[in-house]
Amino acid sequence: MLEWDDKYRTGIAKIDEQHKTLFQMLNKFEEDIHDGKAESAFRATLVFLSGYVKNHFGYEEECMAERNCPFALQNLQAHQKFIEAFRMFEDRLGNEGFSWELLRELHTSVEEWLTNHICKVDIKLREITTADV
Image 1: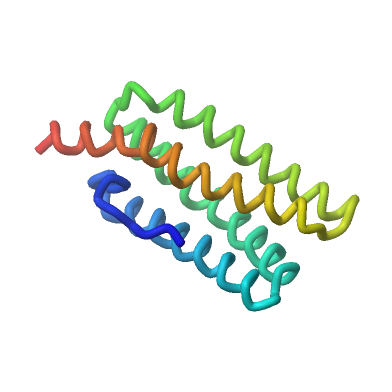
Image 2 (image 1 turned 120 degrees about the vertical axis):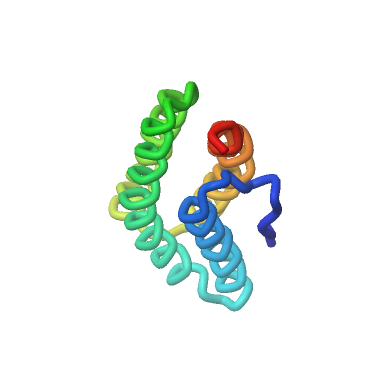
């Protein structure tokens, strides 16, 4: 279980709330797997991520652009890579069907995204937002 921590805070309330929702989704994903609902959890996670990447990524990219964040391009490129990986999971599910291997890969991808991308790229907004105050 991953828990929200101030180290993930961007300083923009809407983005932080969206990130918290992603944490909750990953924790629910894990709970459902342990409760014997692996395939439905996998499918529900893909549905969640489909909406999340459309709404969250766009908003976050706008915030970085408005603030002339020097990491805006790096963030955009990382988002594009995540979307490509997400589409690959959808394609593999359609072509191969559900598997534990696919589930583990999705879980690892989302968990790494949370701990690496948010802490290394998204938090750059905190530095800019704090500087603006």
